[in-house]
Image (cartoon, rainbow, N blue to C red; front, side, top):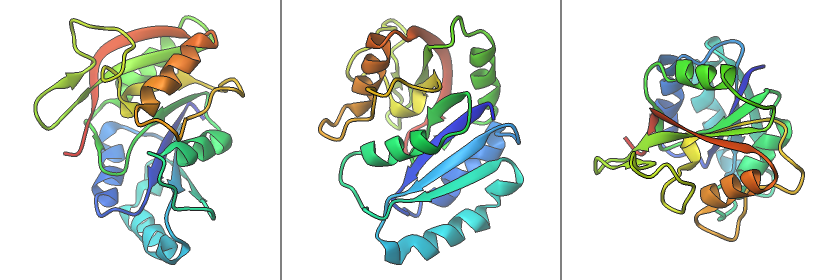
Length: 199
């Protein structure tokens, strides 16, 4: 596997269009989507049916992980850590179940992987928001709170054991990225806009 895309979900209605965006984005059979279901067990059947109906398994490999301790109210920390623990790819990136990939972006992700400098790399892509703003801001390619988004992160695997998604802070995307860099990962910024937040 090349890319493991980790997708936590609580079973929102937006899950179906989110999954459909993977096909238009170019997810392939050399990739996998790790769908981490962080919902009450009574919702598991409905969520599994949504995953099946999306036919995402015809475009890429799918792993479904059901968290028996959920749901967690921790801005996705537990679910993303569970996804990392089961990811089989060489690289990982993230999607939220209320966001969507832009068409064709997997070409940008694969290009970033092909041009990686080391085996410990973190690439920060840009993400569009409904108000027209984009993170990271083109004049500020710096790792800072508010300047990175979970769905704009791409990094090599595995990650050091001490680096985990935190549950005690809202800006866990920034903290996860900063922890990767502090552990020795090489940081780069890519100008491509890969995803849209809450389309």
